[in-house]
Each structure stands twice: as structure tokens, then as C-alpha cells.
Length: 149
Image (cartoon, rainbow, N blue to C red):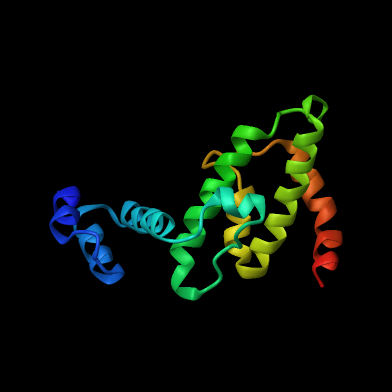
């Protein structure tokens, strides 16, 4: 149903109409995620560009849904790419972990709540990110924040 509606409106579909259609066809959670995804497709934002430093986290209030979506994508990337043990990390992996901590600081400057969602445990209280990364992130945050001033 959503696909049919999107096709009937065509590529000139504005953001407000997209929200109405998405919320009419999907659950509220899925509608917000879908609208965030569409913003990523339509804009210069993307988690890869943010990680590489080619783009920044979106900071406008009207882009908050996009920020949540990107933060979820970022967390998924960290879960996938960070090894369970720090001893199994390559030099590129260490650089990626440092960059991830820096990106968490940038994200927290925009929204502490969104940054916390990246490092939060799952619904059962189990950490999603490796323990070594969480410890390092907590340890390095003050220094990373100071470096941004």
C-alpha cells in the first residue's frame, strides 16, 4: 500500500505528505524509521559519509528523526565491525574505534539521549557493544570533549 501511494505521487512528493502517507500505512515506529531513511536517500547524509568525515551529524530540530536513524545505523556498524576482544584489532580497527568515540562526542553535543542510545544495552540489559570499547569510550570522553573546544 505504501509503495503504491509513493509511486502515485512520484518523486516530487514533499516531506509532510510523505509523513502522512507513512503514518497511515505503517506503525508509528516504522513510519519514523522509513521517513528517516527517505531523508538519507534524498540528502547528503549517510552513516558512511559521517564516519569518513565527509558529512556531519544532522543538527536541525526538524532532522531529529534522521539523527535517530543515523545513530541506529552507526550502532549497527559498531556492533558488526568492533571485535569482541581488543587484542584482535588491526591498526585500522584501532583508528576506527578512536573515530567512533569522537563521533559519539559530536553526537552527544547535539543530543545526549541519541548518543546514549548508541551505547545502550539491549532490552534484556546485555551490552551490544564490546566491553573494552565502552570502557575506553567512558575513559576517553573528557579528553575528546576538551579537544573539541
